[in-house]
Image 1 (cartoon, rainbow, N blue to C red):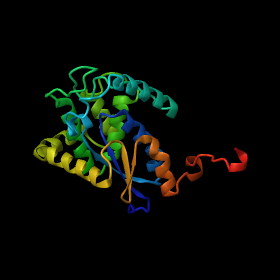
Image 2 (image 1 turned 30 degrees about the horizontal axis):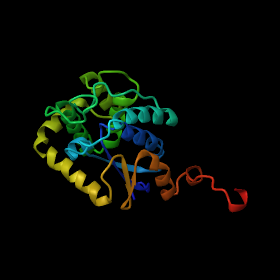
Image 3 (image 1 turned 30 degrees about the vertical axis):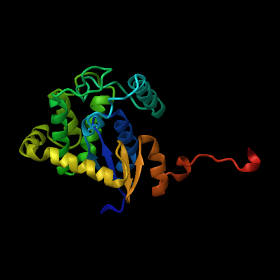
Image 4 (image 1 turned 90 degrees about the vertical axis):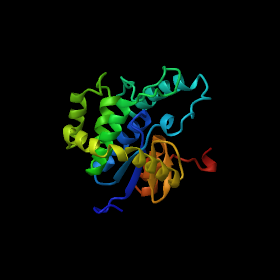
Length: 230
């Protein structure tokens, strides 16, 4: 339980995942209303946390996910564009092997951890995700765009960058620890909400989380027909 009485929920999220963007946007109104307190725990994308994870991915997987992300955004009523540039540098659009040079992602995660250290991890992730996925166009990684995101979260990009530089040696260990925390909670993927040790994997489990917390239970619960009504 958070100090203000709101249920404390962890959200394990990858900044390279549109599904995490969806999860954050779905949770945001409840955070703003003080109904949920979220500790956003950044974890690396699966392609970097589990090298080789996508080596046997079927050819249909990448095009299906692109279609599903656009469809899910439309279903949820969220603005959406494909990340440009991609957060992860891959060998190609059809080859999910990360390249050795991940400076763009490493910079982003350094800023994210610095924001978390200032107690603004969720707010910063929300604003950065809106730059990446939320329809604001290409070039989310430019300084002025990241600075605007930081300011909307009540932060300063220069201060975050300085903090990230001073803790760079700790970054890999911290992200590894976050991955271990996710595994200990009972899952491996993102987005994953965890409440009182119970994992809810995927943005499509957010309604079940609300039900578990006693929030929006009627809206979250499907209308079940009795045997006589079938």
